[in-house]
Image (cartoon, rainbow, N blue to C red):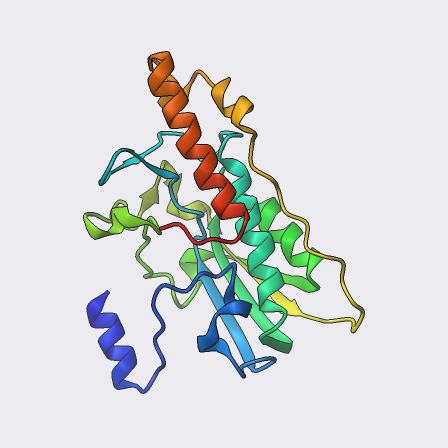
Amino acid sequence: IDDTIKMLDDHLADVYHEVDCTRIALDPRFKNMDGSIGAVYYNFPHAGAAWVDLQPGQGHVTGFYDSHPIVNWRHENLMRLFFRNLRYFVKPGGLVKIASNMGAVGVRYSYILGSAEQNEFQHVETVPFLEWSLHRYGRAYGDRRDKKKRPGDGQGYNAQKAESDMVYTFEYRPSGRELPIQEIKFPPTFQTIMGCNDGPFKNLDPVSAKALARQLHERFIKEVSGIHVG
């Protein structure tokens, strides 16, 4: 990654770190860039693992599969807010290309296509990722796990075959009309989380389960309120 960033710097590219793609419109680094971007690429979007610190300073992945209803809403919101933010910066006719596995259960293809349509990005093409010029991309988890390891060897990720990776292309075709406020999915209530008995809650004693549920609920409320959580 460091070598790639250096190469970009050598070619006079502007490299921004820690960009929250759901809040680009509020990022001061993008000030005065309205309607100026002609192409956006997002490879294998993922909302990241829901980390909690049951013991201070010891981050822990909660252990839910991406498809689990306790956490899946995060992936749908990622796409909805991503496309809504792009409306401020992508010029009419600009392209957005998103690479994702057709069998992904976190950011599902329906979330990508549906969110694009809601925000006037017209789907124009789908091609296999391996046929794309940027197919040598190496995946990342998108959270603190990347500091220690990266997923697989580029051939698979969470049992997803590389042959099923696709690139969805959208063209921004704004109608000029004012769109309604972007709808988002809300997180489960504390009571709903407390009622969960699988994933990380399996075999937990009542006190530990309540502590985990409280931390998860507090984290989810921050996320849905627009507070970035690493």
